[in-house]
Length: 509
Image 1 (cartoon, rainbow, N blue to C red):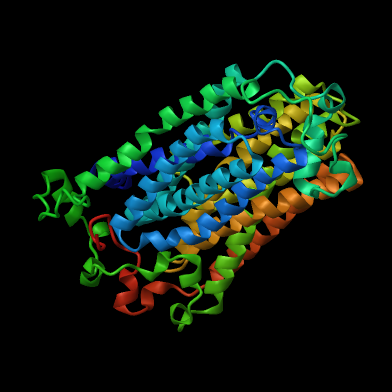
Image 2 (cartoon, one colour):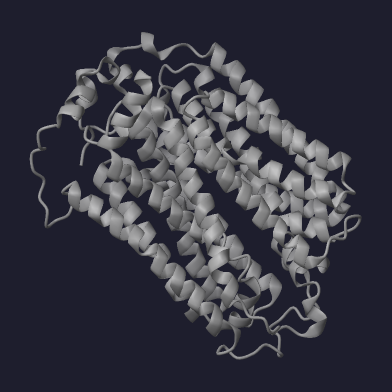
């Protein structure tokens, strides 16, 4: 009960920053899921072939990974973090507004590369800031943060759907296999024979830019307007924290009675050194993390925890991306041979249950330890893939398994992040390493699973899921082992106790 009072007090004290960080992850979700349903309209708009339009996906994913790795650069001060979030969320609105004017696939790929950089920056910075504020109590707030990703990912296809072109701008002989050829081209590259449409250059039968592109433009402009309050919210937080040029810093106001009580509670007392304005080396960018000075005197288990935790997320986030990308292609192939329209519901069902799982995890994470939640998630992934493999000829089990897999994968990342940061007592580079590992996994496993799928057939899709799920479970057991052998950090120097124990007000602005 005392813990609930303390957490609610922390939330009241940091309500505006918390809501702001949640809202920027809504921008992330909006941007991550709109390309799929608008693919054919964008192809018509850019008059491009399927292998050409696939580079748009690659540019977004690659720059998302790059942005995640570089995002830690902007965490040194509160001002840097908030300005990075403001710029990134505003860039996403500008990307949505600009897409309808991209009549060339290279221009569209460049615009989506900018969106990927913004998304990667949001991913790293927002996670870091919530961990800074709530520390050992961050699990429930990270669950809410990642719920907003799923909410945005659900909303963007729903916004786009009424504006998608019903008339087909592709020649008849290219239409039937458009989706399956897209998956092949996305994974196998431009020169693979299975990835080539019958006309792999600009199609002469495509309509002018005033055709399909006009209607879907409204969807992008609506999403740009829906996202616009997010950078405004970040700007308002900058103003409140007096980090704008027109708002010079002032001495902080006296604390309210509730805040004063919260400040004087024993769990919140910190060493005097924790009030230092210096930034903490526990949350640096990927390149700063690799500096030798950060590794002096640390045990080998320190590195092992970083690596195994990142490998777990490499597998689970990779499976999330691969399943979302290829479950449609798996369903329409033999032996299931599901109709194209029915199979189209599977990715939506998958993301819907990811969102539902993150919503359920919000109250659960306040009562269940993050390590337990990760264990349940990983076991659920392996069990679901095994059931899908056993009943691979049953369409009903495919839909049930898709929902179960979405629930199992939903809270893996925030739970793993909270668990790893707690193990390392906020001293390591866990946030940056885990975000980067998850991003690499999402890229690599999509390519690997897709290549095997095209070469070995649809059955290999589930076999890959079992293998990678089993590897995730194995790496998690290793993580538990390294946690047990990791020495407690409380016995270290007093200065080490303070590392990472800063609140929103205690680091340099």
